[in-house]
Length: 168
Image (tube, rainbow, N blue to C red):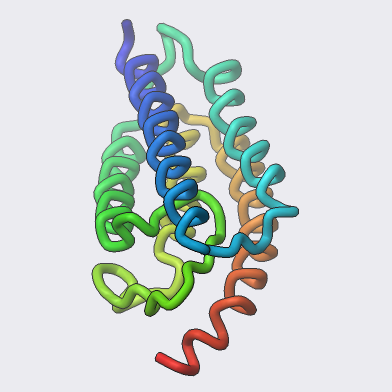
């Protein structure tokens, strides 16, 4: 197995594990009375991410693919940031927008410095992984699509968090 294929296998397994973790957190939060908002755009988000990963498998992941190591290292750094985000949110990390009842906003970890650090992580992931395979076109196309979906998602999330921010 080439380094390129190994990287893509690792990313795919990571994504699947994250979905299992997110689903577990989602079920628990919903059982505790959390309310989901923005469910109408969630299938679009899932389709975008699945298409991104599928395009990498189909278009660039071969046993002969060469890796551009600066992008691979950058991707690794972004994954460290992802772990920081997930650890900071703990049991509240999920792929959906859930508003738990009577829970203050998280203000630790990267949330001390940024709003929506997870979305920054995702934006860098979507750009860097195709670049690691030398696919500037996939990086550009999926970055633009992701920006459009995140623009919508962040507006929905900010609207729902506005009241909680004014109280905190």
